[in-house]
Image 1 (cartoon, rainbow, N blue to C red):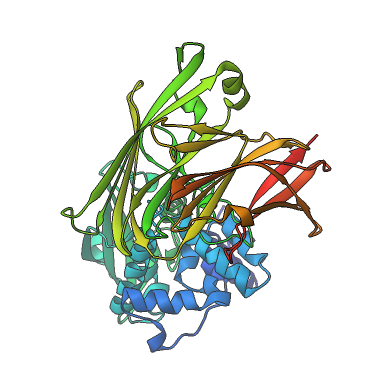
Image 2: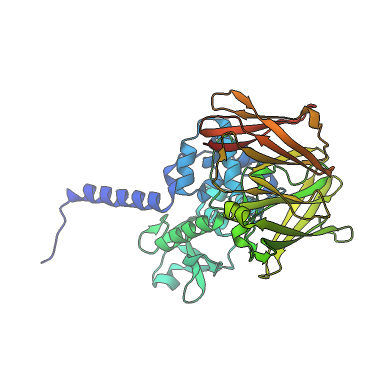
Length: 489
């Protein structure tokens, strides 16, 4: 039986179609549901540097800029809960840091490439909407320049007259599953809806709708952009407050920037290294257990190898059975240091375990300044790594193990460009309500030259179980340095 439609049903039918279109558009691309900023022509910068300065400067409304297309659902929820401009600045830095492919302190390749794509979209696409906000602009920012662009007519696509199409061909893009087709390519269709205006085209819904495969491609690309998913956002974090994993190599090594601050301070490159003892192979040796690490740090002017300086060291980690059992789930922490005049350098660190033949490599640009710096590490014990070199000392950190009330802790302070006044040293526990309790200093040793370390054995007073901050005051106008500690009876 043929079904007929009453004229009175048409308004309801049109409303249904419109609602479906809006819903599909909103689900497929979240920015469509956000307020649109009516920017002027000069608010579409056409160079990468200008684009970065303009869009990053719009702090409180940053999610209305081009970076919003890379926001995950979780990141959107965090942003909506931020309370002030300072928290938003911290969020923006965290957003880019967790997408930094190599954890460099100078530059961020992902961020730089992103704003190059934004600037190019602003130059190329001058219709309405303009630049990165156009459909072609958004695809270009997300995926970069396509491998091939062609023009196709409706006649060749559908066998009927209609609009002209611009077809972008992308070839397999790494791990982006949405691009893995039988032919090894992915096509994005734009239809010319008016002169110079191209809209994304879905073969089921028509112009203006992002098809399912393209939405998947966006989702995969957003997920793949996050290099360090364990880097959690917390308000009040200082610059560089995170741990960067070395992703090249087979040995699990961390560069714990959260405890170190700047890698290039005090006219030296000092790279902190943290390695879990469980990742090392220990061999029995005369009642003790021994593991070895070889480190090599090469520092040279960016773009030149003629004046590079290299320091190579062999660390020997020697523990008794009881010590190994006590800290076996913990980590060893130590820096590798090379003196350098202020300037920009390429620093390359290689750490290898000679017995299982595993290694890790870390490579980044470092900006060295003359400003001194102090970094402290709080652990359960210190460990000489090279008996012929007093300054070759590591600190053993037992992960998750609290310090005992009334017990000892060790503080390792590497002081880039400074020499401490031991007589002025003071160590305190700061309570959650702002009170302070002094620690008794039982041993203080200055083992190094200009780069430290200073080793301190301090006894904790009898205190209640809880979380505290350990404050270390070096006197003489030096900045007070602190670290969180947990105390238990």
